[in-house]
Every structure is written in C-alpha cells, then in structure tokens.
Image (cartoon, rainbow, N blue to C red; front, side):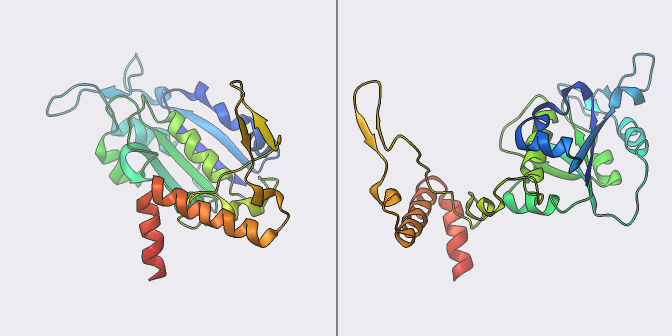
Length: 238
C-alpha cells in the first residue's frame, strides 16, 4: 500500500479529487492511504504563524524552515521502504510520465505544499525534498498540484485501472501523443445539420489496418502539437 503524507496549510483540501472515480475506489480499497499534517500546528507564536518576510526584501511571505522541519519530524520514521519527499514548486523539474511511473513504485511519498512566495530554501536542501513542477505556470499553492501528481501516480499502481493494457497506448508512453478516439453514433449530425462520420478504417474490423492508422495519427498529432516529444523519439531511434 502506498502511504501518502501531505504537509499543508490547508488540510481540508484533501483528499479532494482523490476520493472520486477509480482513484477514490483505490482509496476505499486501501491501495493507497492519505493523511495530512497541518503546518499551522507547528507555528512559532500565539498566532501559530508559519511564514515570515523574505531576507533581501521583496513581496510576499516565505514558509519558515523550522516550521517545515517540525511538521516533517512529526511523521513516524520508517526504514527499509521505498520512499521520497517532494516539494511542489513552479521552479522544480518538470513532472513527466516516466517520473509518475517511478513514483507509482514507492511505498511512501511525503509532499510539501508551498504557499505564499514559497519555502525557505534551507528546508528544501537540508530536509531532502525533491523540487517538482507540474507545469510552466503559477498556482496559489501546492495542494491542487499535489492532487495532480498523486492521481497521475496512483492510476499506474497495478489494480487501480480496469484496463491496465490501455496504459501502453497512452500519451507519452512512447514519446508520442495518443491517437484520437471515436464512439457511437457512427454518423453524428451536429446542431447545425452537418454530418460527421467516424473514420471508415475504425469500423472495418481489420485490426492490422486499425493499428497502423492509430500509430500514424499518433505520429501526426505529436509532430503538430509536441514536436519536442517527436524529436526526442527520433533521437532514441538513431
């Protein structure tokens, strides 16, 4: 079972989206468990403050290293298990499918959710947090980012998805974006009276042709939308 610990100023935000759909089912079946550590319980004054002004000036407030350390030390120590500590930040290394696959093999993940202008760098370095970003944009805090990372990770754990073979054809699995999908009706007439048909090859019953069509569409889509991924794939083949 994957044991997830969340260090956050807003514990009420969890489990959030993680208690719904297949991920929620996995939570109920104890494939993973999630617990929160409220940073405010480790504040430094009567107001239980967890942040302070940045040295050198500038806007915003910074999460204190002593608060983070106390919160982290409140978690019972575990030994001889696969574990990692993550701090979610826009300045971290980009999250990708390969990283999610590695996280899915962990037995314990501790996530620090930043707020304000960020976290004192000493806490990140001294306490051994890996800095990860879910994208080139800024959120108000790391709680939503933590749910994104965890959903992407947990769905890769064996037994979570109903059709595990589908993982092999998903976007990024082979440095290609996934091919387009179609379902009923075979011929759809939109509200303007225009008809749109499913590509004929998908209804042909010829599995070889379908496989080729899907691969070609993946290549085409990747070239157009993510040429960086396509170039990465080409370099691997050289």
